[in-house]
Image (cartoon, rainbow, N blue to C red; front, side, top):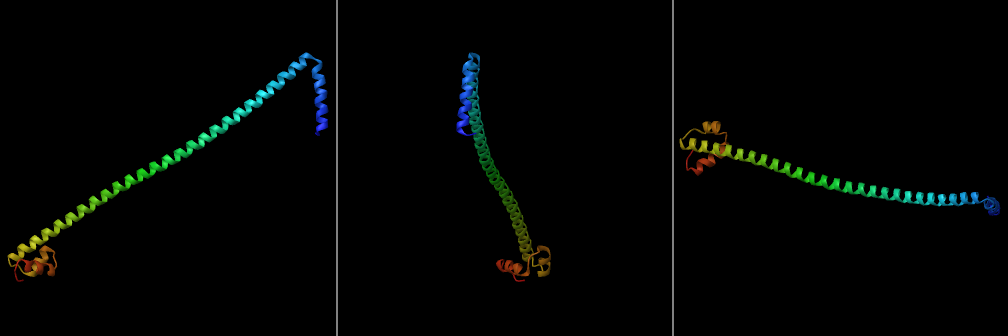
Length: 142
């Protein structure tokens, strides 16, 4: 609608509305209600925006918190697993060293008792070279 027609319609409506006090009051109430509805709609849109904004902030915060917790748990789990593996390897090495010491003790005793090389190898499970080193250390000939 062009401006001239719109102005003419408003003019005619104003004339009609001004003819009767009741109609004029209804017009005033309508204008007031329209303004209140507009204000309410504006307030509601502001509220919705704020709630949406806060929700996004909460989600971002929750993501950061979740990430940080995940990193902490991952580090703790990694440390625990590392300690467990370290303990396992330490135990294995300790057992291996203990077995090796026992084999050396057996071989040294057999060397001291002048047992033959083949018997010492069979019972100590050491190599001939290792047995010769032990014999040399004990100043024994095999």
